[in-house]
Amino acid sequence: MSDPNFDPETILAGMRQWVEIESPTYTPAAVNRCMDAAQAALEGIGGSTERIPGRDGIGDIVKVRLPGEKNGPGILVLGHLDTVHEIGALAGPLRFRREGDRVYGPGILDMKGGNYAAYWALRQLYATGGRPKLPVTFMLIPDEEVGSPTSRDEIEAEAKKHKLTLVVEPARDDGALKTGRYGIARYRIRTEGVPAHAGARHADGRSAIREMAHQILAIEGMTDYERNITLNVGNIAGGKHVNVVPVHCEAQILALVPGPADEQEVLERLTNLKPVNPDVKVEVERFLFRPSFEMSAEGRKLYDHAVMLAREIGFDPDHFTAGGGSDGNFTGALGVPTLDGLGMVGSGPHTEHEHILFSHIEPRTRLLYRLFETLE
Image (cartoon, rainbow, N blue to C red):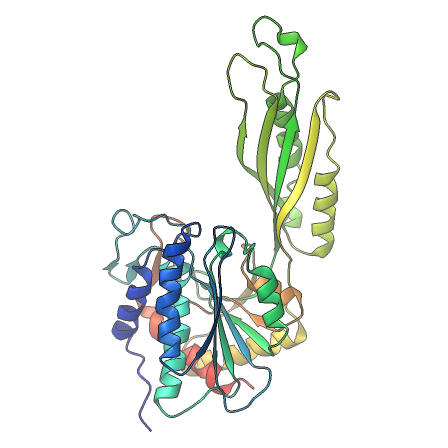
């Protein structure tokens, strides 16, 4: 039996191939090119593929199943291959490069690096004559960066068939694992006023933008840092002509909350907003939602097992409840033991300085290898 290969230069060379297939969410052909590369790699180590065609301007969902020593419910590995970076980032601010310990590239941290490391870990296990204790399903998602609107139902259905979920999203900057996540929701608020000539008949109009300004102050005022509840009005559009009292305005809200009771509270407060001007209509709808999840007793066992393995390798990861959402929200909220943040260590996700740390490639890949080797 040969020894597994965890040479970080070799692993990085493979990561680079996936990173250099730029794959912004709303460019489905580009996302699917990256899916093709990952699918081919996983099939090359013995996986069998189920591919669900994309819809609504989104790429395909890819599931690749690999055998374990035992049959039955196994390990679900969740990762996404879409990125927030538009095509052209690779030729511009996020040129693939290594500067000291930092390796830059679009999506290398969030989260192509983690996906590739998980694939490489399994590849080494099979290559050295072993198998994971449990069967493994890789599920690659095309729309996580926009809330997984076409993938959520598939993720939840797949998770229910598995014993546990490993999410190879990036770790915290210090390498900590994510054993819980806050709930995260996106809301749309619309105001509808009464049009009028802005010069000659201004008093006859009722401004949708003016009403929206009042509502924004009320919404932002719901933020409560002591309770870890934040609401952010992130974009706004309204009006057509400067000489017309605006009749329409729309904004989007991102709400982050620690638990189910807070989710319900924010939902009720937002959907019960009343207009300041009774002649203007206000409508609020929640259109994307990731439920919160907390570390369960089984989740704690999963984390403790990962820490035991990490200490054998030479590092000791802490854990925390993360603010940002991931597809792990869905599986954790279902009660499926979920360990998140198993991917690369680095900084700057969603920015022009997104990078991973080269020095963490080997230990993180070794941890994934040992998890596949030992989890039962």
